[in-house]
Image 1 (spheres, one colour):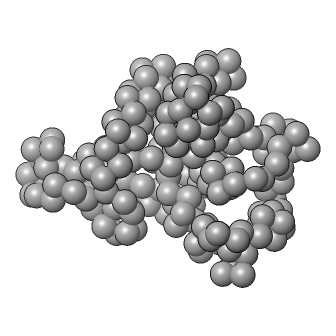
Image 2: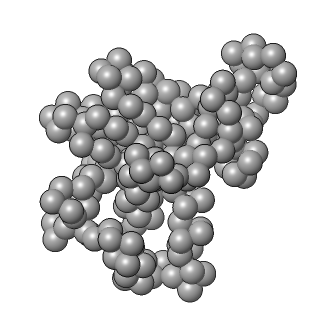
Length: 193
């Protein structure tokens, strides 16, 4: 099984896992005041997950690994290319994501850093309101359905977190097909979109 994760604060109830079963997308949402990282690890173990796409930084700028030629203390090359947030600014979230990746990789699970915002900005129209205060989820679901992405009846698109988890899963699918875009370099870290 492949999953996409929109990674939020540990106890905020904003982490969402998207997975496909029988051609439909299902969403599993974290619960406020419950450990989202534990939820992810339990889901992965119970569902024999083999590939994870996560919307969170999975590495630090190369200067911290003393890579030659890397001197930026705030941004990786992939962050600069995509105008993404600095892993350093995200601090604790970055550290948690790197720890989660380490646990997943130790269990032979492939993990990719994804950037749903870049995918969503190129996919949805301004009228659909992706990442706005007035999103038109119905219209965005129509756009997704034209791409063959449909939600299961037990799942509802209720937030940008839900949407970004779906987009992270789509990026993982495109990585598998060889048609995902990528920014950065492998020594420091790459982001797929």
